[in-house]
Amino acid sequence: MKDNFRLPETGYVRAAQLVGPGGPLPFGRSTLYAKIASAEFPAPQKISERITAFRVEAVREWLADPMGWPHRQNARLAAQEPDVKARVKRA
Image (tube, rainbow, N blue to C red; front, top):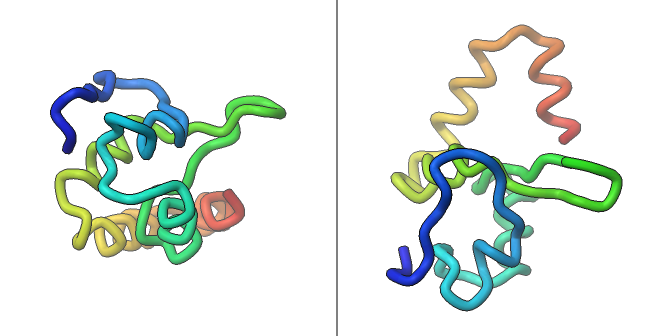
């Protein structure tokens, strides 16, 4: 994580805060969205009609173990009810 950026304890952050100058992610915006598409990074949530943001808790979990994140996420989804899994896949 870059030294000059601090994630809030909870809440949401926008993609520009994650990959912009001083952001905690070591890659750019196009790589971020490629990782989301391949389920290697937590998907953002639609906050309003024009605002999409990432849950800070999910970003922190990914930063703690980027290589293990998809496996933890898949295990968590498998433990949920089928209707919850369907909603998460659409997001």
